[in-house]
Length: 258
Image (tube, rainbow, N blue to C red; front, side):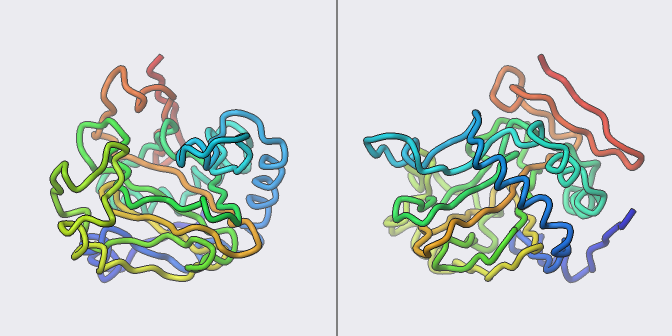
């Protein structure tokens, strides 16, 4: 087993900014089977999945894939990656506790197809979820080149430390990009070009978004979310609609709610 440990500087960076990028987290040989399996699942296009049209209210057939959901149960290749001991060791440092995969959120193959409608608004993931507190983080695996022109993730550093008012968000919980209140924060946005095998860990309150994919090729990424063991999901919400995976030091257990 390969354990990873963050440096003091890396932990301070996460605490300050709300995200951390780790280059070459996986080798090309490790990414390849995950990407191949993702392409197979995309071709099958079996439910559950979401389309861009679901979010942008565009009339017509729902054919522009946004993401495949519930990927943990689609393939052992996916579940093995999500339980990777290196992910667990980093997550345990960042959360300060034993991490738990929450399958009800993210747990997705993200597809950003080459179309102008593939934009993702500024948002905080925690606004869509129901937990006792915000001690959750997401793990983003790049499985190819990600850059501004094809919709790489952008972040607003230190936004996880700000308690924004409700007027900063619209009814869809998007952070209003034209708001004079929000502009000083958006002006601080940063992004980093990603390569295959790079991984970003980001806090559930960190504001992030992605522009449309204006290249000529699809962008495929993998994202899932972990919570601290003591940060329980709220009963009878979407956050308890699926089981969870407790990542122990000597293996894993399943947590069932229904």
